[in-house]
Length: 459
Ligand code: SAH
Ligand code: SF4
Ligand code: F3S
Image (cartoon, rainbow, N blue to C red; front, side, top):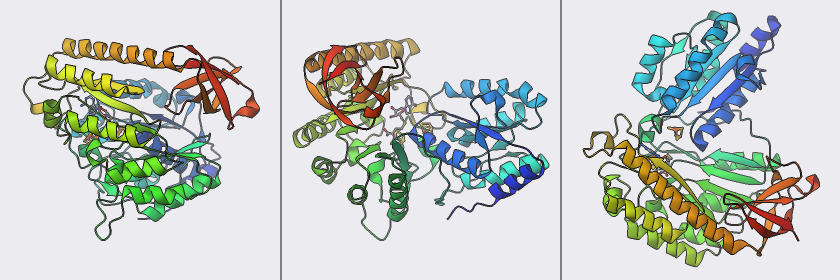
């Protein structure tokens, strides 16, 4: 279905009649897909004539885009919503919306209805197209929407998007997930896989290219199952990459996340032969133990993962990997954990996102026996972190004295004379440069190892 700008206009007219100027504030939790959805909500709100507020307290519409991948997010959300209660009482022109993954969990809706009834709009992950209408009803008639509809089969195109400033843009290519990893809530809250049509994606790519964006990140819970749900053709993720590469102006293409089980030789060859696809691959390991991987329903073994990495290292010069790892999955023994440590040691990831296993209601792992003590999870997480830091330091040391071609990305956060960029394997390098250098490529020699970043100098 194509998105229709309608209620946006009505809200704009309504506010103009009353001579009101509204602002909005979006708080986003969770992954890049949620960030991307928030860009769309921002686009929709700007069509209503709203401007972005810098502080939550000053906004007329506060939108929480929520995540429920792990446990802690719930307290955080309701803390924030609770904080706004008295402000909302004082300010008749304040509206609160809660959208995103968490709203798809039944108990959350109950909790909102019971204890946070002042929330104006609640919408699920497939209902963005109704946001403007529901907000209109809230503003005009004080009518609240606290329900979650299921519009699973619908893909909504032409939603207005407010891209972030800079030269990087993200584009969703596939929604939902069919994998049902046993620990994961995503398939329950995001529904089944739905691939956007190639022409709609390419239109977005061309749009961002024409706006001057140089780098795009293609998003999906499993990008390499892109196209599997197309009935009548054999269009694949590799075909999509091939077409995107041809779009003029786009210089770097990234994607998150691919699933190791679907990483085909064709995809490896595509990355190897492309001068636009980044050689930095996010390859989620989750566990290094074949036994645990099976129980997680990941559909690959330790050996398969290592062979895949070896194959990519052989075929793709300068390839580097980042990953996600869960420690303390039900039944994980010391031996299983050591398998994870072993893979980390062997692959030498440039970045590891590490998580303690968090029980999610309704998933298969919730019902597994042998849940691991919290203290054991934390201890394993610390050991994994220590190993990773040791490996990072060793790798950094090897880089001292070497020269890298680095795109000057922008000013460093902590020092207004220093600028940042990344090595080809995605290490942050900080070096002295000038504002006019932003967006150009410089030869930078690495001079100092600071663990999470390197210091360099332009040569
Ligand atoms: N689709 C992506 C992951 C999305 S969720 C993929 O398959 O890689 C991001 C990460 O959160 C996952 O990779 C996993 O490491 C972590 N995660 C998911 N469910 C979790 C849970 N129940 N407990 C702890 N970490 C979890
Ligand atoms: Fe969750 Fe697995 Fe789907 Fe990733 S692939 S979103 S971890 S079920
Ligand atoms: Fe969280 Fe939903 Fe992403 S649960 S990780 S925001 S898909």
